Amino acid sequence: MEAECANFEIARMARLLEVSRSGYYAWLHRLENPADAKVARNDLEAKILSIHRESNGTYGAPRITAELHDRGEVISKKQRCNSDERSWNRGYIPQII
Image (cartoon, rainbow, N blue to C red; front, side, top):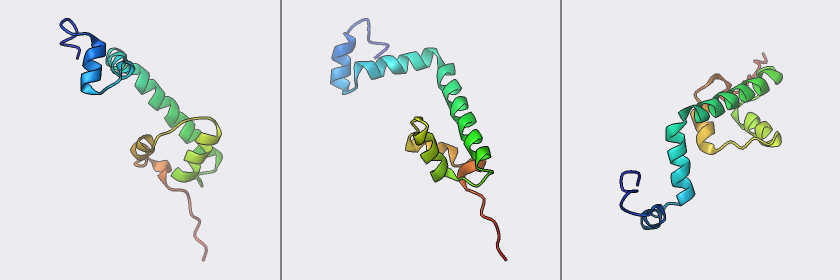
């Protein structure tokens, strides 16, 4: 779309490609400012680690996700899956002998 914007209107190309104009402009903005997404990821990671520490390491991904939702943070399944590889994906389970 970016290459053809001189020849065609963005609205028409968006309609033909079945994408929203706002989505195109958001994508364009992310290309120009990649730091915004990185800052948001780092902010989310800091919140996740804070919740994990507050629970003394006992909260895993489901509880942390629920706590984030309770605090008004929106986290998608994709974001959660990307974070599952990190250390907070499982809670601490004490061994009872």
